[in-house]
Image 1 (cartoon, rainbow, N blue to C red):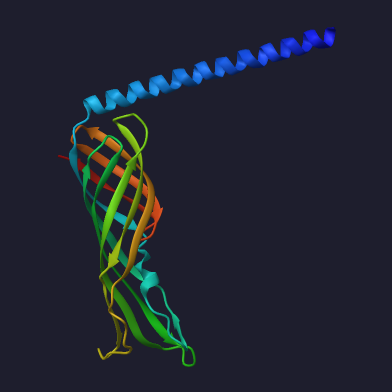
Image 2 (image 1 turned 180 degrees about the horizontal axis):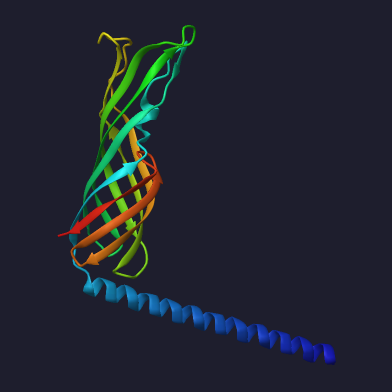
Length: 211
């Protein structure tokens, strides 16, 4: 008898907890839908323009390796980052991102230890950019970035006298950038951003304007 009563209490408790969880979940869903409705009611599509600087320039990995040569320290500038994005919903934007930068490094002969030539790349990459915004605040907006496109750089391997030291393939190659960042809106017309990721750079920051 006691076991039956105890089992009955356990079943009633489970039933009550299940209904309570359903009620809380239903309440959260309703509140989430209300927030979404408010977002769309107050939202106006915009054109977002950003410009920034990334570090370090990962185009160094596009420089070739040569048998019987080891590489010296890489000199890098950029990439300078610019993008134009159309924000068509409160949470999503799509656009075009352009990166421009330079990298160079010396190549040393394994046997003599002397520098034989220098390799350099001047690279401009054009990427299709997709941004997904997270969170509800209009002042602080976390986001994720996924961008993919092509590198259109020019590589040169020149000896000290200016002669060509190696022939290289000048064809385009895959360019990409994935990242997680935060946009800080100082005014309704823009602010600045910081971002971490991988592809063309590891960290970046700059200004963002909204039109």
